[in-house]
Length: 334
Image (cartoon, rainbow, N blue to C red; front, top):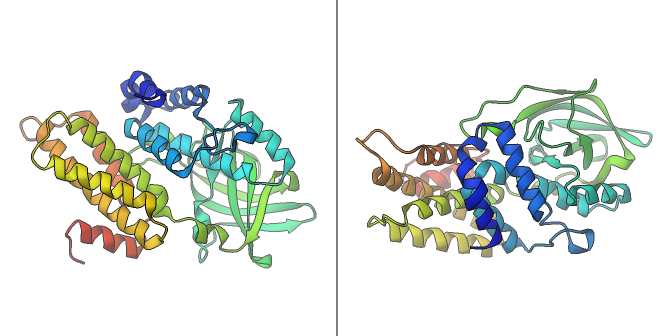
């Protein structure tokens, strides 16, 4: 086993179910991984990070999330934020990044709403050397865990979108809602954010880009694929000792779909891989229930947790095209 797997087996696996529900347990797991040097994998080496390749980063996330999707998802948030800050030309934010790399502070992201160009959630208005943010963002993860957030916003008057670093704390111009209850990973402290002329100074700006830059560069299916792949890896690990007749076929499908995803460069290819992996996890869960269940109605809490996470990852933010692909893979006609 590599260093990450040793840590996961010794510290993450025994507490994974608790970390799914407890904020304090999740924070402990997150801080442990940061202290072990896993908090800045996507930051270039010249800025103090690991400079991981895309495949190395995928392997890390899949391994960690196969033990705990909660702590793995949280750490991915910081990895994404750190990568965005590393790419900025704002020198003051580079100094902030050094503190993140050192584990002295933490940072998450609130940018997925930038994909919704037709329904902008957060609007920025330029004034002097600042931007005033107004709007409601329905989802941001890591409240009371992350100290800061990298947030995305639109500036319609100049047809731009931007990224800024803000404190993840309530203020007179930023109201933070109560944590949203979800079917799984409730410890992530997902909240909505209400901005009311929230001031962002120029020193807090990462970048400004033409409208649609983020949406064209990022597909939600690619981000969510690793969640499903991690579940498949976890389930194959649980089933390997029993090896029912159908296991070998599903294991081969998992490894081949995973390989195809790492090679694909098109959104259509990513969507196909996502739909296939979604179906593989569904089939593995059926096998796991039959192998582990007793009296036909009881299953171990571990399998139950995987099933809840699959329900979350298989429906979140699906567009119509992706939904059709998933239903077709599941052999459900639409």
